Image (cartoon, rainbow, N blue to C red; front, side, top):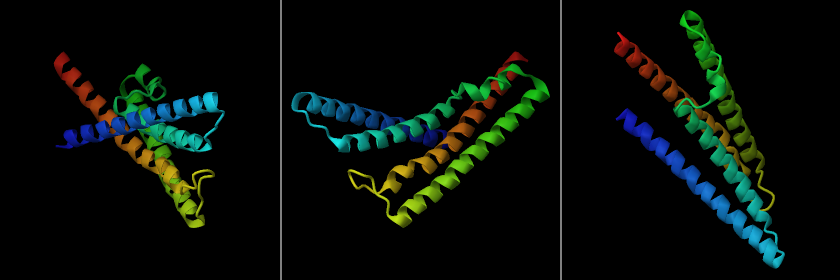
Length: 165
């Protein structure tokens, strides 16, 4: 059940990111054609594309953790063994968790302040907290995906060790 839920969430993340990449491509193409053919420049398109890019980037970052795809976090750890490796893994886990916690806490504070002052985007006059909400939500997704990838890797390592014996 838990695995099905995580796969379902992962699929939704990928589907949403894919949809927004498609929307970004269409908007950029239409804006480029309008500028080239009619000399029109749709300022609203920049806001939508920039906001969509934030969403896609954050979902992609979270999703990459699921498969342990962030090479920088593994480079040193993978080159050590025994207790040193275990200590480095825990340091990495703690630092990543602290980073994501900061991202979540300050992200929600940023959203609250944008709501409080009623900040809106320049062209579409969309409440800017909607875009800002991607930061703390992606922090939450990153924590989930980070530990999902970590435990998946640990399980694979244990299975590999048991097969070797």
